[in-house]
Image (cartoon, rainbow, N blue to C red; front, side):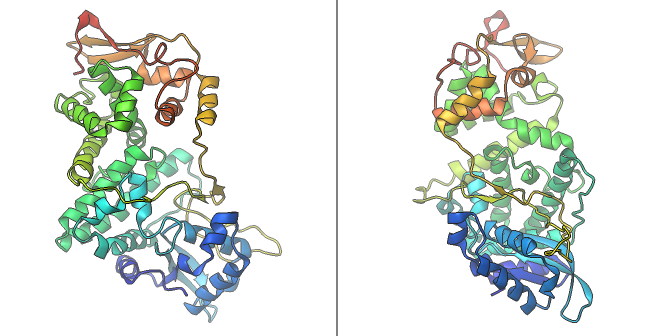
Length: 442
């Protein structure tokens, strides 16, 4: 017990942090029981205490609730953070608590690939992936142990910005090690995985690091967060306008003919369609263009240029996992009072249930929010301002914000593959109308 997973992971963590390391290993715990019941097996609390004690830390400072959260987080996937504990002699020490990826719910490092929408067989073809993937994760998580991760007093928006910067530092350390060891293709793949994830998993903005990894002088900002959340919509609406498609048709292309969709994005990028000086839809945010360019390049390198048969039973993301990529432990007083406290920021430690992606659930949610009778997108062209797309006289983002959660609407179309009920083909999903009859998105 307490091996922390593979030797590569352990070596990566130790190389990245200056602190003594205490490892957890998800393989030590009752994974199947947890998946079936969403509850930690009682024996796992005993195991966790023993694992911690064997590595020189007094486990009595952890409450049972804290240990249960630790087990849940261990089963969810790798992590690393610093905390202050007592050693077996009662002396206060600072440690790096690190959890390996082996035996976690998603298995190995597949969670990275699942979030990016890449099957394991495709990435396994990258030289060095099988040999070094666990070390990469170890370096990333070990880096977190030497970071200031305290977000007390921050708003959710401030946390997103702060933690995006910390994730970029972790990725940067892993990429730097890969390049130092002439594993340049693998270093690029790691950056590309982050770029693909930004589009495939819009809610994971704290890992939208692709355009920050090679720019340590650029600090994470609200503009990065906004851009990461907006690029999928911006690509879809730009392709729809440029190709005279309905929104539904553009989304269908994104889902079912991604190569073709990315080809159109390539041409739009070449024409400067996402440059804020030419397209007011990107709200003067230059990072939208950077993220889209990173995504298109990543898609070419990791998907189009790696023509492999998908692995049967590709990793899925629908297991219940603890909320947030970081977690803090409860320190409430009482019979089960904890003596130790995590320095990690994110206070979400409850289970996040798998999202209900059934057509009925999404359709009801959207139909409740989207009124009928909306107008067509119209693109206005001028020499001064470039291209401006409006719907009912509003900018496209403002229009979607006014009538609905645009991502929920897009999600509905992705799940149904079509339009039902309110017939969005007749409402939002209509062909763009261009002033002067020209179809040109510049």
